[in-house]
Image (cartoon, rainbow, N blue to C red; front, side):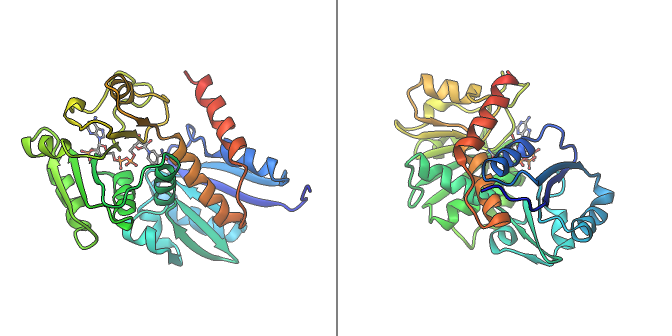
Length: 286
Ligand SMILES: NC(=O)c1ccc[n+]([C@@H]2O[C@H](COP(=O)([O-])OP(=O)(O)OC[C@H]3O[C@@H](n4cnc5c(N)ncnc54)[C@H](OP(=O)(O)O)[C@@H]3O)[C@@H](O)[C@H]2O)c1
C-alpha cells in the first residue's frame, strides 16, 4: 500500500555532503510505500546547532540523524536522552514526538547486531579496540553490555585510551594503552576479536592501516574494521591473507540505520533494498 502522508527527516552534521544516510533512508521509505517521506541532509555549523534543533521542533520533523561534530553537543538541547546514549555520551538519532525530542544512540545496536550476524558471541570474549574516539565509546559500551570478559584499548594517544577505559571501569574490565607498548602487544596475543575504530585506511587514504602486527593475534581471531569504504581496507586484506576471518563496517552502518528507522516509524525497513543501495553507491565511488 502506498501512503500519501508527508513526513520529514534529515541528517545534521558538518559537513554532510558525503553522507550515505539520505540514499539509504530514501530507498527504504520508497520500498515501504512512503513516497512522501522526505530525507534531507543539513550542513549545520556548531554555532547554529541550537537553532537547527528548534527547527526540527518548529517544522515538525519526525526525526533526524546526527553526525560529526554534533553527536555530543546536541544532547543539551534535547528533552530526553535514552540510556545507551547517556552512557556513551553521544546521540546519533533524534525522534520528535509532538515537540518532545528524544536522543538515541543506535551505533551500539548496529555493532552488536553486526556481531550476531557474523555469529560472533561477545560474552566472555577478550576484545581489542583500536582507537579511543566516539565509535570506540559506543563499541566499548556494547561489549560491556554483553559482558565481554576483558577489553583492551590501544591508541596512538595512551592518555585518551586510558581516559576512555576509566569512564567504563564500573561496567567491566577495561584497560587502555599506547598501541606501540609491549603490554598492548601482549594483550593482542589473547584477543578473540580486534576492532579498528580509527579512520586509518578509509577512502581516499586506502594505503593506511593501524601500525600493529596482526601476526600477534591467535588463530581464528575475528578482525573487524568498522570502515565501510573501501569494503576491504588494507587492515582487512592483510588479515584475510594471514587466514583470519574478517568483517567490514557495512553491516554496522546498515543495522544502526535499521534501528533508527524503527525508532522513526515503528517498522522494520527492507534491509535488502538498503544494502543494495549502499553497495551500488560504494562501488561507484571506487
Ligand atoms: N560502520 C559504521 O557504522 C561506523 C559508525 C561510526 C563510525 N564509523 C567509522 O569509524 C571511524 C571513527 O569514527 P569516530 O566517530 O570514532 O571518530 P573520532 O571520534 O574522531 O575518533 C577517531 C579515533 O581514531 C584516532 N585517529 C584518527 N586519525 C588517526 C591517525 N591518523 N592515526 C592514529 N589514530 C587516529 C583518533 O585518535 P586521536 O584522538 O588521537 O585523534 C581517535 O581515537 C570513521 O572511519 C568512521 O567512518 C563507522
